[in-house]
Length: 428
Image 1 (cartoon, rainbow, N blue to C red):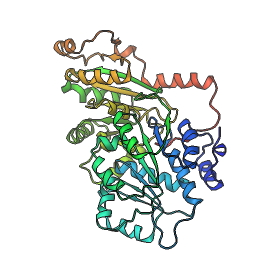
Image 2: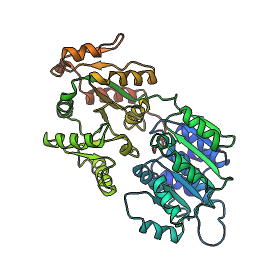
Image 3: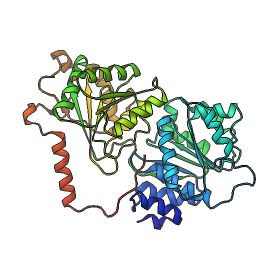
Image 4: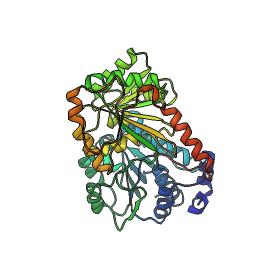
């Protein structure tokens, strides 16, 4: 299967080829033809499976092959995302794949001035990528007309529900044409998503590439039991001892993210934090520095992490386990992307074991524990954390293979079996 088989135009195929891609991913193989047929879509796919290109490419083709209404250029496609980072990422995809098409796009989100956005909208755009809050600001100020929207995309709509955007979404939906095509993409496939789909979609095509709420197969998951007050010490040790060069660390709170970043910096590790209290400029700069390798560790909260798209990110660390089990799937989905292997490490203290059990029920598997010598929980902590049928490792540090070595040997084994033909296009 190639992109030529999906019915895409020459201009789109040219843009895709320039990115070095020739083989569509499973989500793209199913979504692109259905969208081109103007079907509503309900798609569930893990992060890193290429779902952004799965809706961006056919959306661009549909708009480029149909004539807009005469007069001022009015938006015909709206893509809603839960966070600023994800909006910026999707906007980049629209520009990358639409570079040879006569279409204009704009990205709209909060945390930056609204005046430049208003000026862009006045010049006329075909595609808007937006977060719900700032989009409503424009609607209230009457700087945006959504009456001609032909295609609506709800990207990571499960996250938008989790973040409490349902009321904002309903206000936006109320001003859109009822005759539009609606595409819902989600990393998880919950009952809430199905209920929302029942109210928005008309005879939708159902696409479910990965099993529900499962973690990427390429991600090795492991738990390190440790006392809460020694988590930061253990994290700094692991990064230094194993010489991890690029690590994404999740904390539960914004304050916790800032504090951990400061502590790791004092330990000599180049670290920055990204969370909701940071300005948009600071968040953009932190993410850019992390991608370019200028900083070694990026500490993030769940909300701020959406849109972090790094194909070769090797390590994700759960400094705190998330309160919502599905967030664990989102977190570790930041690694093991685009066919690469990844490692997800969770530092678990005694009072987090109920959260761990919820995650394991969701995954339908027991995550292996590795008690690191010198960082063993106290006797009371260990007694509380003991569970039957849990895989454990108590190897001394000197006997443990470094993660880099393990990944290298696995990759070599895979390469000897024969590489896959073509390079798959994976964005978000």
